[in-house]
Image 1 (cartoon, helix red, strand yellow):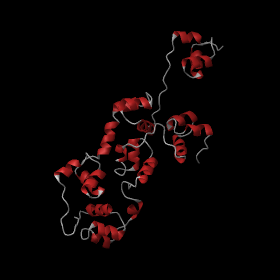
Image 2 (cartoon, rainbow, N blue to C red):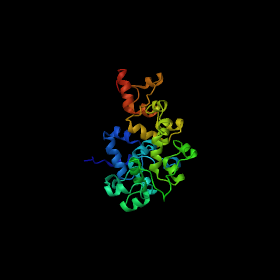
Image 3 (tube, helix red, strand yellow):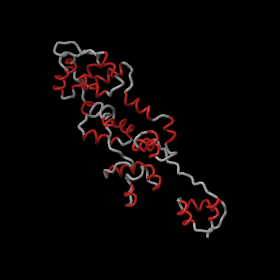
Image 4 (tube, helix red, strand yellow):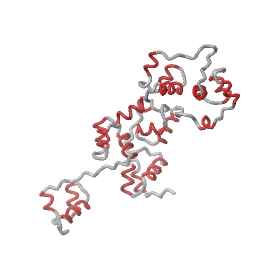
Length: 279
């Protein structure tokens, strides 16, 4: 059962990264995320969906889109449903469908659309089943459509959904063709290019906003990637000057902390390390 969060903690939801709030309060990241999502609060640093990010919806699983954009799969699913975009892969109904011998016999003899109507499935699902069995399609007596050089050139450069739209065909047909040619999904490739070893090394060593500014990656994506990989932001260490050290034991820890902009317990720790008694 999820713990009951105090009003003070609830006020921080969405204002600082979930991982940071979890670390400060001793509550698990999972419980913090659940509390925030339950209240419809967007994660810290959230920016509005860009056109490029919206184009990812439906071209891969909600989980994968979430990893790229830097939000949860729930947030991705909510946005996709809001725009009326079908989910990637088989729906629960399609995944449960068991093909009868009679239905299998229709493949390649009737148009995919007609079979889809009869079995109450998506046309691309029927096409996927037919292609998995190596059965050519039938299109009103004409042979199956052949890919042109131009269309083949789109693979790996445009999203599967965009290619399907341009060709007027099913997205799964595009996916099957791309995979058959050993071409990587462009959106997945783009994610690999984004999270280079150099970018990953920055995470936790500087604020997410600074990483975002230097790399051009949305701050929500930076925070999300860091949170998923358990990378904590290292606190910036204060370099003590001789003048500040002279104040230790002369002024109170709280006064010094306020003057130099750090926490009182940090001042106390420094004072104790130098064996200086408190005032």
